[in-house]
Image (cartoon, rainbow, N blue to C red; front, side, top):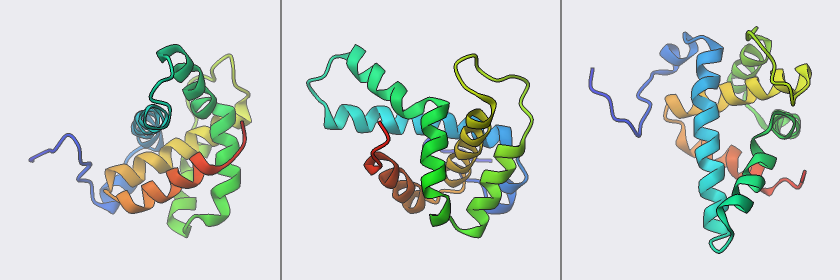
Length: 138
């Protein structure tokens, strides 16, 4: 199987067959890179420390949970299904700086991001991420 590191190359059915925590594992990384790139692009003179602090405000579980609550009504039926599978997955632990409900919703959010990335739904992924960076929850 040929694999392009910048492309997911999973069919929708293949991605649906992945464990939702695996989707969240990928989604977490994709979301982090997107946020960091977005912040650097819009704050080119900001120090690395300040960029890091700003990035945390986007990637922490509470923020992801708030984003998800605000965009859920904009999702397709399939996207809601992927989100719910991720949200309802039982991970082994919860970070000490997040409550269980926020953490589970954030996991669902990350599963959705991972699913969209792996299935190369780039336009939809960009659309959702654009909505998120324009929400004012900070």
